[in-house]
Image (cartoon, rainbow, N blue to C red):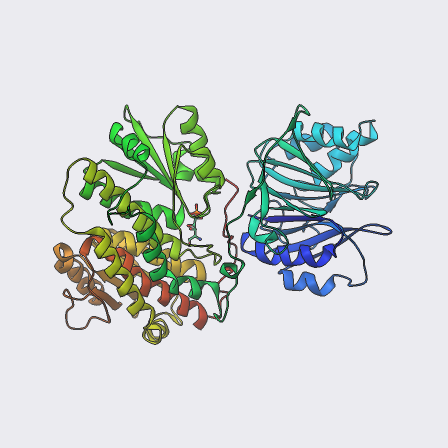
Amino acid sequence: MCGIVGFIGEQDAKEILLKGLEKLEYRGYDSAGIAVQAANGVVVFKEKGRIAKLREIVDENVAANVGIGHTRWATHGVPSQVNAHPHRSTTERFTLVHNGVIENYELLKNEYLQDVNFVSETDTEVIVQLVEKQVKIGLTVEEAFRKTLTLLHGSYALALLDADNPDMIYVAKNKSPLLVGTGDNFNVVASDAMAMLQVTDQFIELMDKEMVLVTKEKITIQNLQGETIDRAPFTAELDASDIEKGTYPHFMLKEIDEQPLVIRNIIQKYQNEDGEIELDAEIRNAILESDRVYIIACGTSYHAGLVGKQFMERFAKVPVEVHVASEFSYNMPLLTEKPFFIYISQSGETADSRAVLVQTNEMGYKALTITNVPGSTLSREANYTLPLHAGPEIAVASTKAYTAQLAVLAILAADIAKAKGLAIGFDLIKELGLVANAMEVLCNQKEEMDAIAKEYLATTRNCFFIGRSVDFYVGLEGALKLKEISYIQAEGFAGGELKHGTIALIEQGTPVIAIATQEHVNLGIRGNVKEVAARGANPCIIAMKGLEMEGDRFIVPAVHEALAPLAVIIPLQLISYYAALHRECDVDKPRNLAKSVTVE
Ligand code: M6R
């Protein structure tokens, strides 16, 4: 949440910062701003709304080679021009951008800043005022910045400008992601490498509680005791074209269409030379030595975890619990003697999941992160990583990462099963290949999906998704997709559960999307459809070929029943996409959300 950038060099900083912010807009888009070191001091441009609006107010005539920028997802204070970053100290000597949450900002205000007039409602303003306060009492800027960092409780990625020293950007990080990038006679700062791929692919990771002095020639990393730390850069293996929409109207549609390719890519990456699934033996052994696997995740990744539990229990006979990270951190269940933790996170930066990982690391338990971003915080801090190989996912609504998570979880379960000498009963690689083919067929049925969205969802107030067994989990994900981008009140339920309360909400015409891909519960879910239809609902049954019955609205090509979630989610993603279009919603940047949820 929130994205920050910084540039120091010889080129036009404004354009580099604005382009960088455009790439980071997925992290937050309530407001945006930049501050640049101009001839007559630091100049700030900020505006409520998207980067496009910020662009309109940036004065082309201001020349600057140094600057910082920010795109905001509001935590403290409403989205407004005043609360937008950068924030300035009273004398306007210091200007700061911040990603994160300062938990003790009220305390700091009361203890150190009683005489200061705050202009915004943000926690960030406290930081910039604290720096100024420390300088006023005689510290150098470097000392003042360091001292301020020691006073902060919470998460931060910071970039600070000093109007009296235009040749330096002061940077710091704790819990919020931040990288510095290096170039020939310039250096950059970014929440995500994507933002600065325009000028460099060489980045240096920063660790928590580090502070960095960035000039155009030099990057000096220090810990909070002032000791210098050497760290080599890495090459960001991102293709700039992966983060462009190309001819697609939205990233979400592009990412839905990429799913067959992603599954084929995963098959390739996780096969050995003999064409057999093979994972890192250390991961396998760690799971085999454990007595229970705990999957921790949020949102879509949590839904993937629910399906993953089925894979692990059915294929590998490994008991699994799946937990929402935000609850687990303070409401930890009684753990077994030898737990093993799996963190699922597309971004690898989700603060709720990371909070649990910090706890389980402290408890000495081993952990695996399944993520789309190797090198992300969750990947670095876990013992092992399994990458999703899905390519950057930009749309806030997760699509290809979800199916990639399912594929990797199925592969992991099959690998464990093999090590235990258990036969899973089918050739997973071959069946995943067939899933990719089915996905392709589904992605080519967009007109039909559009028609369903129009018929059922163009004007409805709410919508229910029902399924039994693993179809219930897919329904949860279908409902999340629909609600987050179309703002329809959508909920997923186990088919049999509806009559225990929710059926009271069924009115004449209420859409109920029923998923039927599992033979052993096919009759059961159809019974639930009859129950809601008898009360006026407008059912839309999506069934898998071979289980179809008269009146079904859409048939998904047959794939192996265990892998059906990977295929049947495609129509649900597409229906959500078109429903959002019919309702004129911003598909890629839905209201109130951000792609990377880096605050707890
Ligand atoms: O990056 P993560 O997978 O950890 O993110 C978890 C959730 O925030 C994420 O899946 C969210 O629910 C998506 N917007 C769903 O489309």
